[in-house]
Image (cartoon, rainbow, N blue to C red):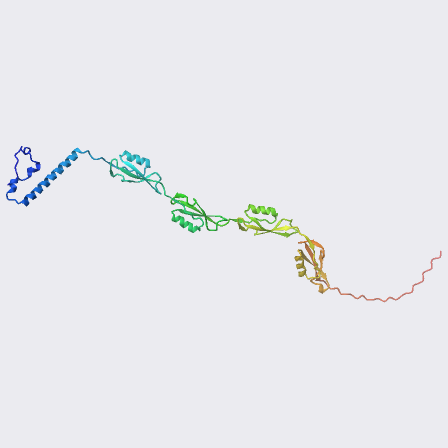
Length: 366
């Protein structure tokens, strides 16, 4: 038995669902079919009916529900300034969302990225995240005060900075140790920036000026102007220089001293009168030593003598012993030197015969 045939023009008048038109008649199923076969066929009918209903619902949704939001293409705003990029996205029907990130290569305020990317499709009214450069990242300069130059260099490099070492004099920080940094420690600066490291070179060296011949007061002023100070001052009697005149200095002129170093001075003092020692009869060496100890300057001359025992001995001195003289003055000593020997000569004696005197002549007669 086949499916029921509906004559043309009578299908709608049957009152049956459209899916029922394809189903075989119950009478046809009853003859020669098992209950299992009939159940299988019923399941098939229901599946076909469900598919038709789903299709009808889908068509209804398409026809009667409003259309989905329109799609737009995301504009490329990378490289634009923040305000310009936001305006471009709004003009395209999108909502800009701004975030910030540090960048060492892109200027502050410029867009360095976006999501979704440019040229992709997005729903109108959806959000687009733009990443704006906040400029280079900043970091605090580490404290390296008191470290050696090499230690400070390593620490600053590890923190991402570029250290440059400079040496400058210091009287308070040990030679080779860090005095300070520029910028100072704990200052927030751009990562990768240069940092000057000021390292102590010890006290500054100053050339010692020439002070000999100056008065003591003038010498002290000269030292002060040079950044130096007066050390030990020694008085020395002098008959050649005015009292207070610098006779010697130590260190000598042209030497180098640290800033604030000391220079010792020997200053002339008016000589005092002291008794001249008696050196007559001493040999030259003994006499010279005795006069030197007394503060005098010996000056030896020679004086000839015929006595060998006096050769090399002081025969005379000037001023004489016991006289007062200024310290530093010259005492002349006469040292004996053997002169030519004199030989005694014999004078021959002459015998004279006495003569008798003649009587005086008679006076002439007048």
